[in-house]
Length: 341
View 1 (cartoon, rainbow, N blue to C red):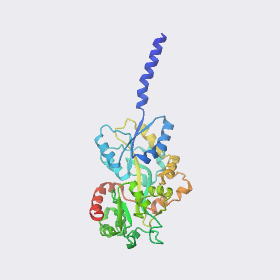
View 2: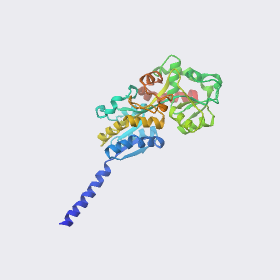
View 3: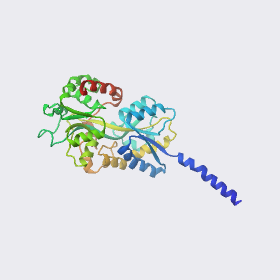
């Protein structure tokens, strides 16, 4: 009899192992420091609360979108982190679930700029703005306006991303009295900026190197990268032009077809927890996407870190994310042909 009981106990244990092993949440995100950021903050809290481990699938923004399209019938991940405008491409291809925000209590505190769509919401925010080496630009130059980039004294000193022209497209249109929807108004303005460019970068590492070496001491740069190299001893200043810095919001969505939607909702709620949002802001020097996070005062005062509705409204230049998704390829092609080449 004891042998039978013992055998049943062993079988019960063996049967339970696959069930436990299958009970995990799979997240698609960028690799490197971004994966570590999610793992050390939201994923850590989620696992502590649920006992469910988190696994990651990592890759580039567009590479992951392509893979998701191919695996549409059986998604590899339960949750995807991507940029706000690329998130619209997921949504347009039917890859995201419609979010039920009633299952995400912390979402009640989302700022309006982070309520991206019915399918994806903000996870953290940042700006692309003017970052410069004060020791390597004309004395007294502080970049109070985007117009300052066109100063002839900056000939051969500027760099900008080659993978996303939307920042300068929006800026040039605004300076010419237009907006991103009528971006053509800024075409001549952008062409006039061509002599001031020194280089174009394709990734964060190149961006940081151009600034660290001083090869291009003025850059349209991700604020988080600027604060990282500043922490490494590089003398840089981050300017917020009077027209506003170009807002970027990274987002999270639940993949349609996920077998763990309840867990996915719990994860997003953990991500939007005030303490987690404060941790993310502290690690990356970006903006929390909720209005009740309590930041370290030293972080909260950094240019480009928004903690009040007034800052979000007055210091950010917002490109409609759905429009951006539709126009990014067209803008990049135009910018490459008319400014880069």
